Amino acid sequence: MKQGGIDEERRRFIAFALTPSLIVLFAVAVLPAIYLVVTSLTPFQLTAPGSATDFSAPLRNYGLLPGDPRFVNSLVVQAKLSFWGVLFQVLLGMLLALLLNVQSRFVEFARTFFLIPMVLPPIVVAVIWKLIYTPDISPLYYAAQALHFTMPALTSSVDFALTAIIIADTWEWLPFTFLMVLAALQTIPDEYSEAALVDGANRLQIFWYVTLPFITPILVISGMFRLIDSVKAFPLIFLLTSGGPGTVTEVTNYYAYLLAFDTNEIGYSSAVTVVMLLLVAGISLGLVWMGRRREAMA
Amino acid sequence: MSEHSGRHATPGRLVAITITLLILLSPFLWLLQMSFKSNDQILQFPPPLIFTPTLENYISLWHSAFSASFVNSLLSASLSTALALLFGIPAAYALSRWAGRGKHGLSFAILVTRMAPPIAFTIPFFLFYRWIGLLDTITGLVLVYTSFNLPLVIWMMQPFFDTVPISLEEAALVDGARTRTVFTKIVLPMVTPGIAATAILCFLYAWNDFFFALILTRTNARTAPVAVVNFMNYEGWEWGKIAAGGSLVMAPVLIFSLAVRRYLVSGLTAGAVKG
Image (tube, rainbow over all chains, first blue to last red; front, side):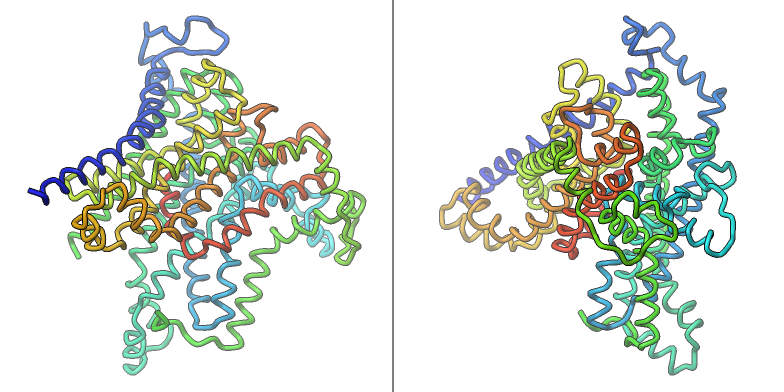
């Protein structure tokens, strides 16, 4: 009887501890999401009274999207940015992790410094790359000048602007993949590579047949995280290119921002955001599903 | 712990590591050295690598509106951290001890609330704040940062509670203690390091925010990251101030990151799903 009393009290305490958070999360996450969908069904403009509650043509915004070249372009730009960014971050992160996977007090101490770009405030990262890409004060342009080589203006060039963003984004997030891969490398038992060495494998073969299969899951997972997160490059785009030149670096996130807070097209921007959310959610769920399948097969 | 497959450090590898580190950090170091240069020195070609450092950029920031925005950042980041901990810690404990079905589903759902790109929250928050008058207020910022940090607290604290042996609690309960007392007197003291690490990460997330502050504040509640960018728009690209402002904004981040580097992975991974 006493046991039952304790259980009952515990159950009540657990409910009591969980409820406030659930209420807060509902209020600040679920309600805004619903409100976003509601606004996306209206032609809401901050300057047009009554437009916020005009549900006469609820799917109008969504109908406009496929024919909006800026929207379609923004998806392509995001795809390019995500693809190259994730690829470079995973590859370079892996190389860095392989380089730093040594037993040494100095290296263990140094590892923390490799994490700096990732922990810096994103806007400071953007300021740093603004310096690097601004010709009058940039060490990059100084070096080019000293070598009598003319550097093109990277962030205002149609050909280089997106690359400039990808480079900065890679610099910022490479430590993340590095950290994940390093953690995986440290779980590989020494015996494996020692056994391979005894069998006469060279270092490349050990990497290919022992190390790589071991770290493949973490390469996939960290790439996944970065893919989902790659829509977050906002500060870089905001500060370095403002989406330009033209719309060369205008990702969907930035387009939605301009629509809502530059041209006051709240309704249309909400529709763009809803589609973007669905895409991100779809990609995440797809990746989770793929992960489950892999686990089930292994 | 030390039995991992790391090779022993050869001198060649140590040199390679040092060079890589210097290359990786050079953009960051460039900003730092620039903050100690006068505007004339900044524009000199070739750039003087050896120069007499000056604090004039920092001093002029101290006397400008930047100091107020620095205080705004401190206030909104600390208050939102405190609130997120207040709500999140009991919730994390409940999830850790809850044996019922749907536990994993619920903790995943909580994390998903961080997955959406910030723009999805800014439009509703902006409209709502505009309606009830919370635009450009610290309260408004604290509210939005708390909502972003709450899932992080729940996600990060749960494993810490998992490590507290349940038998310890049961013993106290059998002795007649109330669950509430067991939680505050026995469980909480055991997870203090976790609370400290979580608090720092929450602080950093709020401190690092640019997007919400850009849209939800104007002048009164403007935070330091937005203030740095404003030096580029209105005051004619004062690079010295921009560099000094940037350095000041990253100072707490660097100090705190060193303090919690053991917990960085779990914190950043939980955050990474945010999008």
